[in-house]
Length: 316
Image (cartoon, rainbow, N blue to C red; front, top):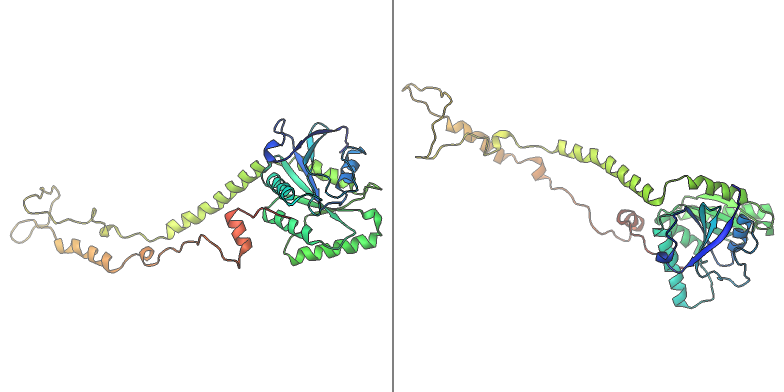
């Protein structure tokens, strides 16, 4: 992908103030404060001053939108970590970022930036775990690889992957980058190009819901087939009824004649199936259907998140 134009569009403080029209695919970049996010954005767009680079950590406090090639948006999200702001402002930043990542339909992929010079950080792992629980598509970019040897970078990535394994998190796409020598730029732009052809988030969710409905339907039909049905003779509407005195209607069907020449219905035979049905109740009544509990204990937090679909909002 060749970047022909990169223009700042607007800044948003929360989800509802994000640009609505025209709808373009969005690719977000986020990471700890001072991870080199602004330098990476300038590298991708080949503009030195598009994103402001500052020596003060946590300078980005708004959701910044840049229009690239008039076809997609690059979104610069506030960094999480040790931004020098009040606790109230920090909480507002976290809530705005969480709402954007969870509910923004135009978002195709989030690039999580990791400092390759540091050992695995707890705050990075917490954020990646939250992304995993929310099933949000993302990739990892290791920054500042030019400041150390390739061997040190490989050692740092291996340690990072080991922690992901301990947390039972499947590693996403991994890219190494350097704002100094341009390493990783082509891989990032190629990934963006591939993701632009993907379906929007709402369409993917609708397809997944339709697939789940299709898979569940045969199981329901199978249960209905396995449910025993009481014999027809047990139904009071189909059993031979004994007519009441003075209200019986003449039966048009021929009845077997007795030795006296009169027709009489065999009432004892009609009662036998009813008595048999009462003695042998159906298996469905004998075995009550077990209902799934509404709440889940602390021993299955991930199961609770998957089944309720309501993961906790991420907080740094």
